[in-house]
Image 1 (cartoon, rainbow, N blue to C red):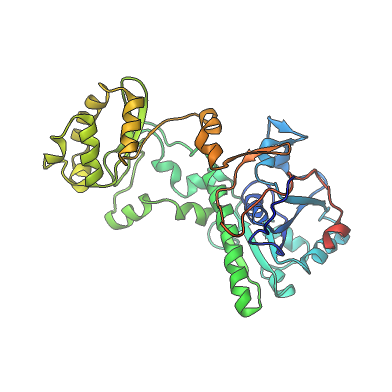
Image 2: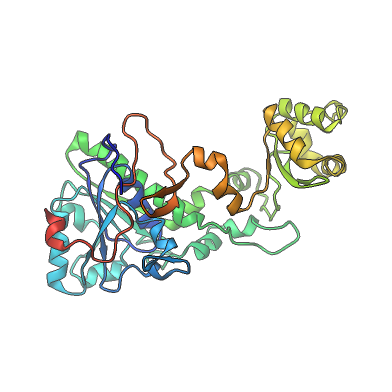
Length: 378
């Protein structure tokens, strides 16, 4: 891969990524994109998500490749004491450990609890990723994205208003947990500059899922009303929905009264903002159904593409519903470098763009065991 001329923000930081599947590897990739030296520890069989396909690229799934670039792979059979010692040798010089082992697995290795790592390696930042934490009523239970979505309430308000609860199609819990783990590593590294000590970062899928149940959780805590699926509607903002035009559907997200007035001007319905039932967002939420009937009638008469362009040009949030092919080929995705095609690697781009210490793609996703343990310690 080509090398960025300027060093990344995390150059000089060594990360041992002993996690597997999605949340942990995604965290490791974020750190690697920004310059950290990431060593991925894999079993002789490899991370199982290498097989999450098709499609496959160079023997590994596109799924694996999307969250494991900027890493090198070291194969260790951690069921063997000698191989575990090689892991410990790596941790002796590491800054960050990312892992998602079962607590029972750690204990079978003679490690009594998660605090052992930072007690043994005082400067180590240890990001431990679990399903529900190691303790508590759900402590130690296995965590899988969709199951945690269900346990954290996310499925209960996702889906059509008159239909069944629906899993969020994107693995939002795993990805959010990965971002939280990467952020935890950075926070702990910053604290280490003051204290000289690393620390344990306890990051669970469950906590991450509950934290993004916004605004449904806070609405319930203050109202006592249990939210139900609302389709594309927003619980607190109107209009915020998909509207069918004469040609294409448009998503409209109008978050204040000024924008509502602009929207109605473009729709040729200037009377709506003057109606007391619709004059403020609070009133529009209370009279949602009546307003939706009027809006649907107006949108259905208009040509969607041109309307969407006029609304956006006037600062009104409006968007056509694009499929992923259209997104991947869009000029804006190319301009923002959110689809990367570099030296044979194809994947999603890097969303955090730093002006002085830019992220870069320095290595493709690793072939299983492309680095020996001895070379990794160097």
